[in-house]
Image 1 (cartoon, rainbow, N blue to C red):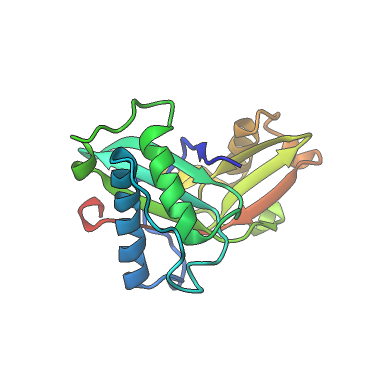
Image 2 (cartoon, rainbow, N blue to C red):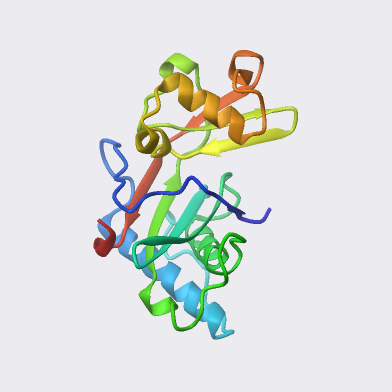
Amino acid sequence: MSPQPEDSCAPAHYSSPTEASEFSPDEHALLLQLAHDSILASLENRAISLDSPSAHLAESRGVFTTLYLNNALRGCVGYVFPISSVYRAVAETAVAAAFQDGRFPPVSAEEAPYLKVSLSILSPLKPIRPEEIEIGLHGLLVSQSGQRGLLLPQVPIEHQWDRTTFLEQTCRKAGLPPDAWLNGALVEAFTAEVFGEKSLE
C-alpha cells in the first residue's frame, strides 16, 4: 500500500493534547532528522538504512509527514494504517511528501535544506461511539461500502467544529452522505502524537 496525500495535515502550531508523549525527545529528534536524510538521499540517488534502531521504533504505526517551506505547506503524505515500522514509515512518507504529493511540484535540491518537518504518529484504530469522541484528542476514520475518509485530530480545532460536524465532515471526506455515521458506517478513532522542528512551534 502506497502512502497517500492528505490535505488535513498537522499545522505548524498544533500540539497533540495527549497527557504524556509516547515518544521521547531523542526519538523526536531522530525521526525528524530521518525525514530530512531520506529526502536528501532520494535527491542524491543513494540508499539509507531503514532498519529501526530500537524495538519501539520498529512498532507498526500509521504516520503522516508534513513539509513546510517558508511557513507554507509544501507536502503532506501518510499511511493511515500501520503497515510498516514507525522508522520506515517516517522515511517513506517524507520522500512521498517531497516528491509524490500531486498538489505540489517535486521538492528541488535548492529547496531541500530549507524544509521544515512535522510528524504525526497515529495510535492503532479502535471503534468508537459518537458520544465518546473528544475534539482535539481523537482523529476519525469513517468507512462504508469500500469508501473511507480520515481527518486528523487537529482538523476540528482548526475549523472550530463540534462533534457532530466533525463526524459529518469525515463522512464527506469518504465521499459518503454526511449522515452516514448514523446509518451503518463504521466510525473508528485514533490519537496522534504530533511534533515538529523548533522553528515550527
